[in-house]
Structure formats: C-alpha cells, structure tokens
Length: 288
Image 1 (cartoon, rainbow, N blue to C red):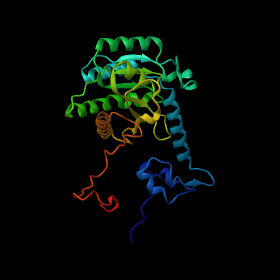
Image 2 (image 1 turned 30 degrees about the vertical axis):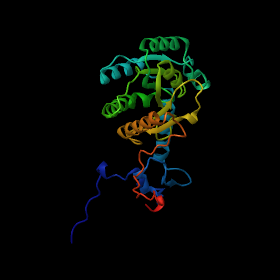
Image 3 (image 1 turned 90 degrees about the vertical axis):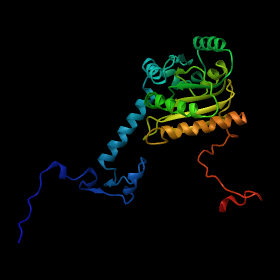
Image 4 (image 1 turned 45 degrees about the vertical axis):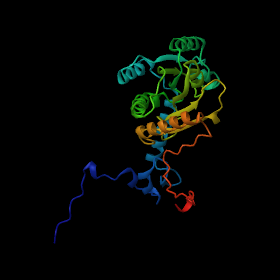
C-alpha cells in the first residue's frame, strides 16, 4: 500500500482567489474568458468576493485617472514627427483654459482659442489649394488613448492611403488640447480640407480607459451636427484592432469622397458580405 503524499506548502499550489473558502461560484464564470464585461463574479455571503471588488475599484480609479490625465503634446509631437518623417504637428488649444473648465463647459471645448484660430487661418492661406483630408488629434476625455494608439493608427492609415488608387492630399497634422469632437470642424475648414478625421480619446468605461474614437465629417465647418458625422469607436487592442480601424476609415473616406457626404446617409458596409445575383435582380437577400 502506497504511503499518502504529504501536503504541499508550495505557494504555486495555494488555492486561487476564485477557490477561496466561502466564495460561491457563478455558473456563468467560464464566459469571463471571452469578455471584459463583469459577469460570473460569484459571491461571498451576500457580497462580491474580495478579489472582484478590488478589480472593480482598480478599474474605476483607472477611468477617473484617464479623464484627468494631461496630454504631453511635445512628446506626442516628437513621436509623430519621427514615425511619419514629416514636419511637427501644429499645436492648438480650445477655449477651455484648463481641465476643470473643459469638464464643466463642453461648449468651450468645441471652439478654438483666438491664437489657434489665427495660426490655422495663416496656415490655410499659405497652403492655398484645397486638400482631401485633415487629421486632427484631440485629447478628449482620455489623453491616455491618444498617447497609446494615435501614432500607430496614423501610421496604419497612411499606409492605407498610400496604397489606395486615389492620390490623397493631406493637410498638416494638428494636435488640439482640451478639445471636443466638433473642434475638428473649425480646423478642417481653416485648412481647406474636403474631409476631416478627428482622433479623440473617448469617455472611459470601467474596462476601457484607453479607447480611441474616430469621427469623419465631410465638408467640415462650424455648426455641423453630429448627424453629419461617422464614428468608429473602441479602437484599442482589446476592442477594434488598429489595422481594422484604419481599413474601415479608408472605406468611409472613399465613400464620403464619392458621395460628397457623411453621417447618417453614409452607411459603413466595409464588413458586408457580397451578395451575388443574376441579371433578373438581386433576389431575396435574406436567403442569399
């Protein structure tokens, strides 16, 4: 008869946080491997397990930090200049003088301050002719998203534009501090751009403090409504991948140039399957 094995004191064999005594497992917990959503958390008595509660508190703190994190414009400008081998981006500022005003007065985040407006108008006059696209980088509600993903996305988008059959003419890059989405309209108009694509840090969620948003507007001008924009959201490694977002942006840019519009009238069909049909018509798409 074999001798019983002694109990191991190795820390690697200690019970995991989800195997602690007193924790009642939720049968949905296996789905946690497929989503960052807070599901299958289990319980300890009538409360959450300590590990799950600490995870929530950490995520909440990260979301709050993302909102208040100041963007390092000089560092970002240097990275963009090196990555794209181009001139340094034009640095601009909204009429919200600091973060507190920015959070309290969204309207001021949509307007350029006087110095920035004059700088852009001078740039537009010096450029003269109209360009296809202006890329505007805005800190928004998560500068962390901009610092983490903006350079990589712009590199990927430039690769898509260079490979496209149309010779895309782009305005100089701009970076706006304390800005909202609509501030791209004034930038695009001043730079004589047919379309503007705003890269902005989105409002952080409890599992996405670094989510990048993209907003496309054809014929940008102050006063454009949100219904005239197309949005590509949740661009980050755990969401929509950078290369996929760049491909989708190019699709929308092509369609916006072809149709000369954007917003609710421009549908994103970049992932639609091609429906084959004969000469008699498309048939029933539900059974294709």
